[in-house]
Image 1 (cartoon, rainbow, N blue to C red):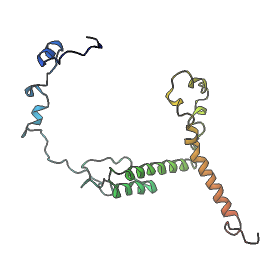
Image 2 (image 1 turned 90 degrees about the vertical axis):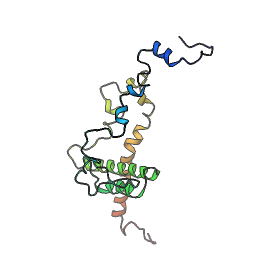
Image 3 (image 1 turned 60 degrees about the vertical axis):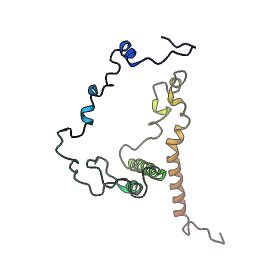
Image 4 (image 1 turned 180 degrees about the horizontal axis):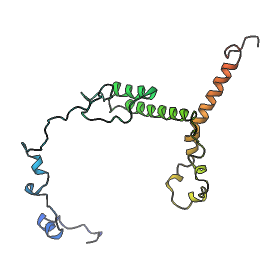
Length: 196
């Protein structure tokens, strides 16, 4: 029955729904519910433990302050390292997951890790190229301008912000390097004499 402006009639009874909709209420009877046997006390699950055996290599792993122990199984693919690792570890040791500071420190650790990776790439054979690896210039040969208009692309809304996010950190780092270089090269350790 399509929606109408009139108020619908009374709610159908379970029997009416069962007659109209095949399979309706299949799990209404606890005896028919697939999860019911597992919800019963004393069921035999076949597990040979109350708590899984602890995974090795637990030393130095981070855990939230609200947990009394590390989970029995945990990932080891990305161990914490460097300054970013120290920031992340501090977030776990000091703040609960319910506090904003915990998450802001984790984001800061991520940004530090990202900046470190970008700087490290400068000393490799193929350094990061912020100009062509993002934004319009990264789509050369694929109609980068005309493909953005009239096609409902979601990235068009933030396209103006992409150059700031991609090039901004590089420009800030370059400016800081130039300022540091000037301070080092300037006679007197960067201080002007009172007579000069």
